[in-house]
Image (tube, rainbow, N blue to C red; front, side, top):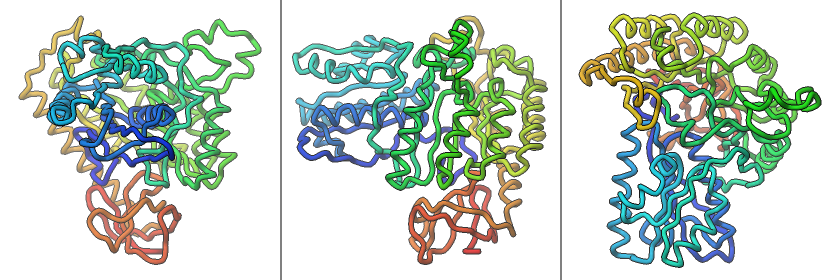
Length: 477
């Protein structure tokens, strides 16, 4: 998440590592925007294209193929991609042979319309169609536009070994589910990534096993909603009620998967993201408490502290139910840190409902937060059935109040670590000082401390001596 823990907009373009396979001569330049799932998908795409003769490059100007993996969660994210396409266009004028493709959620949302709007684009590929890239590139080579945005009910890419582009060599992502069934009225994800389906636990554990063998020390299990993970032999989660009794008896849910991973790989840290409140079970929380190597950090988006707003959002939980879940987490995992997603100015939000959000924040006192002003997304139920009637100035004022309160709570939560020993996984050199290491503790707080004879990937005990509003400062305990 970076060193800044109060975040208004998630980091956009991601600088990726390069991968070189001997014998490959074509150059792939690939950028990823948006969520961690997109970053993981980018690594899957690089793996698929590696088999087609492509090595990745940091240099846009030398690329034979340029791909941008897009996000549609907010209008600003789409505008950023449009600006990047302008940059690609400038380079393509110098190198006309270069091909440009758009991947991900924005590709699925706009489909062939993208080819009409952005003349530079040669191919458009949705999140479930990456295995079709070789065929689509053949179409482009033949002088034809290429589009595949068909959503799948089965595709999990469980048989693809990702090229680790977005990695520090210490931590890695492993995708366990795809899609979402929750149908929040503000969210485009169910329409761009399809229905929920889970990946075979055997393939998940095999991927983790391979990462551990390559000396990765921390693994994050990913999904639009990891708590919905349910494997009963394949198929959509919604069809589980029609599965055979044998399939139901042998099914693996998220708590069981987490337990399997933490038990087999006891020297490896595990994180997971993202959770949805209505789907997080007490079994998951108890599993976290059972294993020291499961990080004590939960990203638990709430979006609003008002039950009436939550109803309009179709969030499937109330304010009171969310607070009860928070109470259980703090009871079972008192050392657990919490972060939130919060939307200011959703359709029809009153001042009283906004105050409910602030009071919920006071109740929870989140460690970190991702906060946004509501932006209407085309094709969502909110866009079709509700009026975006909160004035922009009011949205901005409410968002600022949420951000300021989160800063206060974040600073308070950081201060609670002072004088305590924390275990830190060293991720690299501090951005501000070559003489200091940086790494995160179990609660996902960034820790900075003077270098000694440690190495990247080492676990070290640090005595916290001071903090900023977002970072812990200490020394070897």
